[in-house]
Length: 391
Image (cartoon, rainbow, N blue to C red; front, side):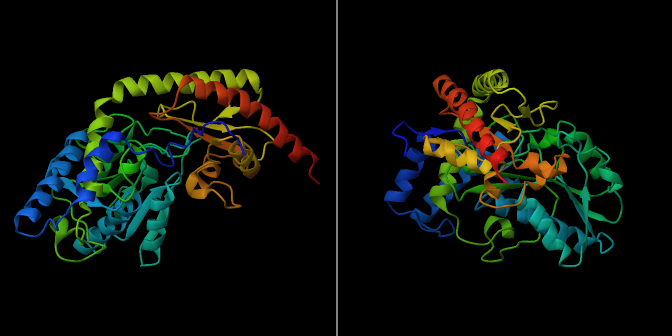
C-alpha cells in the first residue's frame, strides 16, 4: 500500500465536504434539530433554517423558493421528476403514455424510465451522437402521446454539455411535453439557470459540490405537477412526504452558496488543469483519446480511452499508489459490463472497458496533476502489457 498522500481524482463520484457546509451543519448535529413542522420555538427555528437553505438553492439556479423540493439526493430527485412527472402528465391526459430519455442518461434516470415501462408506459430511447448529445428534435418524440422527455444537462462520465437544451425544452413546451434535465453533475460546477434552460424539472445533489450526502433537490417549475413517490404528512407542499433532514439541508444550502460564489474562478482553474493533463498525457502516452472532446464539456473531467489497457486493472494499480479514479462511472464500478453511456457513443465494448474517468475539484492541485502524469502512463503500459499477453 502506498505511503503517499491520497490523490483524489474522482470528484464526479462525490466531493469532499466543504468546511463551510460542515460548520453550518454542526450546530444542528450537536443540539436539537426539531421537526420543522412543529409549531413550538425549536420547530420554528428548524423551519427557518430549512427555508433559508431553500432560498439559497433557488437563488443558485434562478428559481423561486416555492419551486424547490428537498429530497435525499440526485437519485430520488430524478425518480420523483421522471416517475412523478410522467404519472401526473398521464393522469391529466390519458393519451400521454410515452416516456423517453436519451441514451446517455445516468442510471438514476435510465432505470426510472425503465420502471415506467413496467407500469404501462411506452418507453423510447433517444439516440446520441459521438459526443453523447441528442438532437433538439428529440427523435420526433415531442408530440401529443408523450408525457415526459428526459435529457441530461452535463454527462457524469464524459462531461459533455447539452448546450442546445434550451431549444429542446422550448420545443417540448410547445408540444405540451414535460421536460426534465438531470443537472446533478452540472450544478456547482458551471452556471445553471432553470429559467434560461426552460425546463419543467431539474435535479441536483449536494454531494457533487461540497455538500453532504443524503441531501438533494428537485426544481419543479410553477404550474407543473408531480405525483409524490413518497406520500406522507404533506411536507414539501405534499410533493415529498417525510420529516426534513435539517442538518443535511442546511449543509446543502451552505455548500451551494460557496460553490456558486466561486464558479468563475474555479471553472477557469480546473479547465486549465484538465487541459494540461490531457495535453501532456497525449505526449506521454500516444494513442490516448478523450471522449466528448469535440463538444462543450464541464471543466472538471477527462474521460480517457487508453487503447489495450484494462481500466479496472488500472484503477486498482493506481489505488495501490494512493490515487483514486473511476473506470467510466462510479455507478458502474465493479461490474463486468462496459458502460452503457460509452457504448451509446459508438464505442466498441473493448474501448469502453479501456476508459478511465479523471475528475477534478476544489482540492485538486498542479502537483497532483504532475503525479497523475507520471503514474498513469507508467501503469497503463503495465496493465496494457498484461492484456496483450493474456490468452
